[in-house]
Image (cartoon, rainbow, N blue to C red; front, side, top):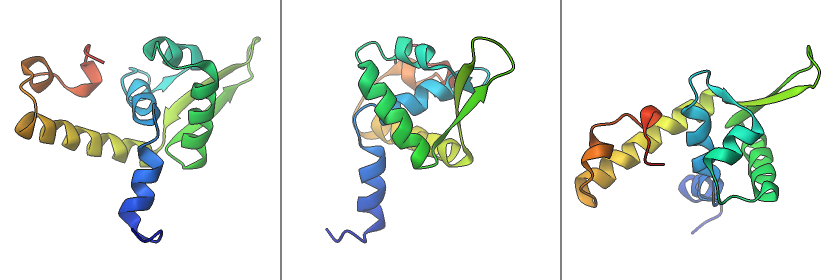
Length: 120
């Protein structure tokens, strides 16, 4: 494929291991933001180094934003979805619908919104 291909460039951003799971983890929080350790707890098998790398990449791509609360000690860092990241959730839900239609019979997934999913 041509490196100018929008599909190829987009897939290059979102197909990196753990990236979409990080986005889903942040999305599933009721406050729409999560701390590093909360994301790490959601994604048991991710290494700290990989999580830090992916968070930086997603921030650089404008999918998540890093917020620092320095009003208290210790200083707390939170990650939340940008508008770009929220649009990505819509695409992930379309992927879920495609999987349910063509590949998988999953009654729990079919009857549950991704935000409330306990399967991930």
